[in-house]
Image 1 (cartoon, rainbow over the protein chains, first blue to last red):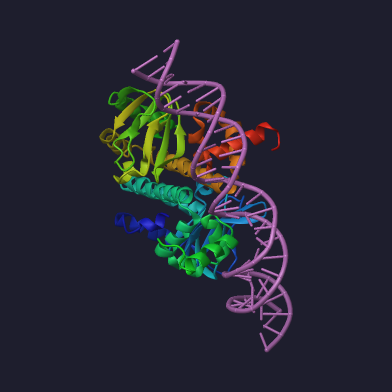
Image 2 (cartoon, helix red, strand yellow; image 1 turned 60 degrees about the horizontal axis):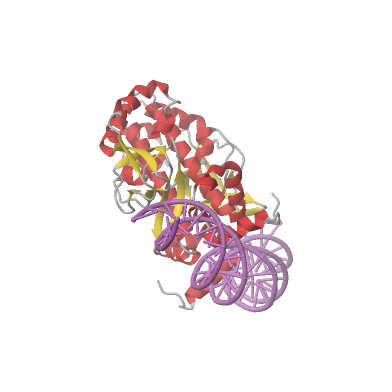
Length: 194
Length: 194
DNA sequence: CTGAAACGATAACATATGTTATCAAATTCA
DNA sequence: TGAATTTGATAACATATGTTATCGTTTCAG
């Protein structure tokens, strides 16, 4: 999240670099839980290699809501900021190399940054971007049919479909994995034109 | 949005008050468009009396995503911040009294505030709260059945059901108005127990 | 290498939900 | 007040989607 904005505010780079050394590097296999649902988020997670999914449990069934890949960072933001139990769990999908920056250092970093003149703009941009992202996801989820959503994913983020097992994608699209199979087979038969 | 946080940061109150005089008071009938979909948001809207809905158009059909009532403020945040066409329209549901604060003053206000020591904390809290709100809406939308969503609305925000016409609520719940009727009649017959 | 687990496709069936049309009641407005 | 509009309920039908089960194929751990 924050690290995405490195290049936009080069004036702040010394701050990022100062904290790099506090990151803990880990190599983990697939299906490693990085944050349990209900636990308070204690780290900012940066993905060097591999990918992870964010999901929550509902009546014993996983519901995946988002995917993250190389060079992306994440945390359960609301848990991290409000110190509340996370609504989501975070789990690796592939064997991955990740960096964890413990919360205390993130807090320190934010605290230091807050005295810098560009911080306000940074935060506005970050929160604006996050909000725009969530709004777009939300609107797409309720406006588009699952078929349209699948097709958009195919066009704009095919790497997700290639790397992520189908049943994780299915719920991200809002359907069962069986129905996603139906959608794919319908598309393959050329019955649908966009 | 910002105005919600007045009480939390009393140190900043002088700033709010300085800008009150630039607000434009309007009395408008029901079904007045306050922001058109596709236009760039030019005002921060504060509701003194009445209520409004935020919606977007899809194939000629409205899709309502949020309601706002007395003493709440709103704008199409992503349009406002990024200077991009709004994904949403804003319309009054009841005859309303609203205040508009033109964008230029909001920018000025933010600019002034950004030099204040509490601004970083304010922004973090505001954006954290917004994000938590959207995440909760999103999770509820995909996790809960429409029936559960209706029941939650009935328990937690009954004033919405009382004041807002049913077809606006239906889409907010993610169903057609016909199906919302079905849900209500099923509940009324006591066939469902929560 | 081999057996177990994960994965993806498909069929059959059940259910939820949308669509269209109709009607009655409530509300608005000229 | 009286007509027009809005609102809400309901029925009938069509469609989308979920659920469960089965069966190959692939992947993976021992």
